[in-house]
Image 1 (cartoon, chains in turn purple, yellow):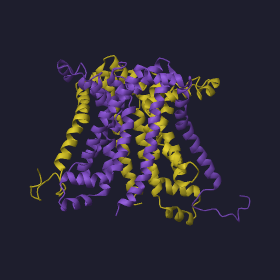
Image 2: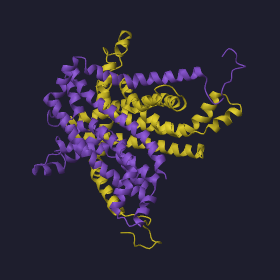
Image 3: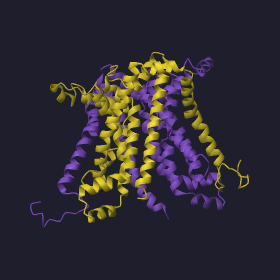
Image 4: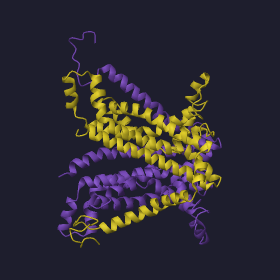
Length: 285
Length: 285
């Protein structure tokens, strides 16, 4: 720096000092807003020791919440998986009128507040609605019961798989499928043996994100669940109840399970991205 | 069903040898209608059954206006802060190499994966008056949690990946020759970055801003814990919807939800227009 004349400064790069300052600002911002909350979850969870941590997780209401969360994800994710594959097939393999509009509609749930996603089902199935009392007379409970929670979860996780598959399948084109069909494969054979192997990593990626959101959804589920302990409480709702009862250690214990799920999701996602790069390079004959 | 129509006539789809169009599109549309469109139509139907004066009196209610102002105001500030720091973080991640870069890159997605309720209780544990960070500010009589500042912090957490993930791929595509040309023509580094590079990133930055803003307006889970939910001070619009629902005031909930949907869609539309305008101006890159 002192001897400016002899020092070469790359004109399309920053000085090392600038780099250090910018990197530090970015690092501090991430540390404060992203890492610290994550660390706080685990530290608060173990504040009263491992024994009380374990107790908070095996306590009957918590166990019921964990079971319900797994059940809801096990229904919602496969439904959106089938939809995602079907929608991506229709959109990527064919040219038809109104395609752009259809893609916009699929993305719609992303721009709707989770609370509104829950509200629409309350209006549809609530006791003030047309449908609610009719279904009730047949003994079918939707609102404040498991079906309502599943519906709200399906709504908020609706676009995840489709959104991942549509650009991927559009990118891959229809050449492989056309070759398979012209060699005499049936439509299903083409899908199972040609398309599916091509899209499996993208599919897994979408399912992963869909599952993380399905297990962690709070707003939409909170509106339709009715918060009945041991019956219609998912893990995030159980966290809220414990927190509002000032049972902090237990709230953070259950929350730490969800945070661990998020970390696993991120790790697998990063792994798939590395894998993706390899897969794309190799797959392009 | 349209495959036999003559080529001169209007047709839904271009001819193709790939099977399954009717099945996949039919299923996708049916599922889309059942899960998304019919419930949303129910909301709009319910809103249209309110008389204009009813609708207006709900919207001009002091508490509704205050909640909308807080939701849109905090989302706007959080999105602006995220634009500044998000672009800086993109720059650091794309241009610089330092130990742990991959890990930090992966962690940027944490807010996508971490359930909102978990983020909410973690943030309020940090920023509460006796919390890890909140305690530093208490001596200066600054309260972060239970004020709009706390809401803004939660929305910064939620919105950051939207900005980074939208701008990052575009920044990676920037042709270094443009920078070299600017430097050759005598621009200093500051001029190159702010007058040459940033304008070409503008559409991506605006998209990221719009996504972060839209998500912030509707966000519920991460905000309700840190907000304190004091009417007129720190009560967000999605929470007011939940409160109206719990009072069985379906008309109130519907009206607030409808106005939120309309404003969000209008904002996204405006941003889309700005984007296509700037694409026309700065495009061909």
